[in-house]
Length: 78
Image (cartoon, rainbow, N blue to C red; front, side):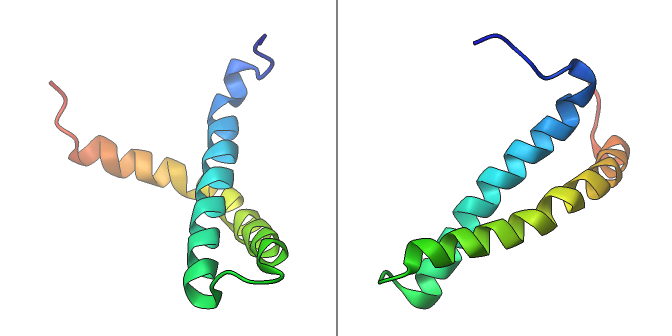
């Protein structure tokens, strides 16, 4: 497959994919624990996932630079 995301957008693409995958897993797990499997589980999961992703993606774009600054202060560079 030929790359199609410009290098300058790599951080945004990373946040997009990371939050999509993480919120999918976490929302599904949380919903399964709270409701259990049953009719309508899939539709409820998609709704919960999309809502959580809509919050997580912009949050990661805002929080990531702060986390990078914190790590720059606490990580020992060899």
